[in-house]
Image 1 (cartoon, rainbow, N blue to C red):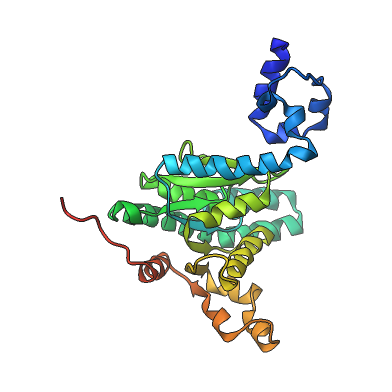
Image 2: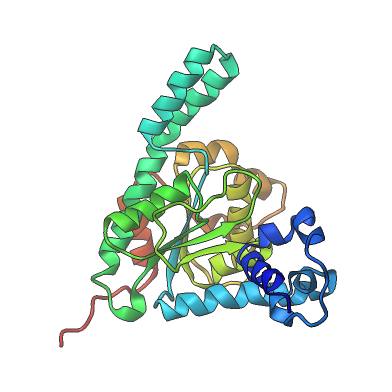
Length: 292
């Protein structure tokens, strides 16, 4: 096998986004003698999609088990809500541009930067409290691995010296891994379905901060799985009642007969980090380690 092509194959295998770049693949000549697992042309064929799906299921599962991560608190939220400092910088830039729409967007981000601070505080609290729990009850922050609320939650766990997980998705925008995810727990996915499966596989609670379509998708996926008993019941917490009560109207679904009375009990509105942790504590018999 040509050494240059072989090395190129291994480099490409590190990044599925590069594998899907048609121009790159066009420049890599087919070679029947290439090892199957080192052959990007073979691995990206339609017929090998099942293999790729199996790999995306298996790799994060094994790596998290090796790192002792068995229980997580999954934290969702907007990738666009930044820290106050960064939001104010963006507002200043928008004001200099004179673009009215850009200014309104920047003002909204400044207002919503409070959720960045609260997600960071929640990540820190989970990591701190988890240290006092027995090994089998320890909880780890898990996010979508990107910027915004995800970064804040990973950052909070990092502040407390705790491990945290990032399940990133390859997108043409927004979704680069944030620097606060624990080394060896930062994963990249091609398939949304596999990524969402990994969110639920270890989740002991879901906290949805204000967000957009992606946050809505992940929230409704979780609600559906729990409602249909495809997943064990977990606390589903909507952080920021003012936001969620304006964008989510389950009472209308009940009035129209689309859901039942019990479905309104699947989630909680909260407005503080302490209340969020109390709901998680009340749901599970979290205990401290037994004395030696």
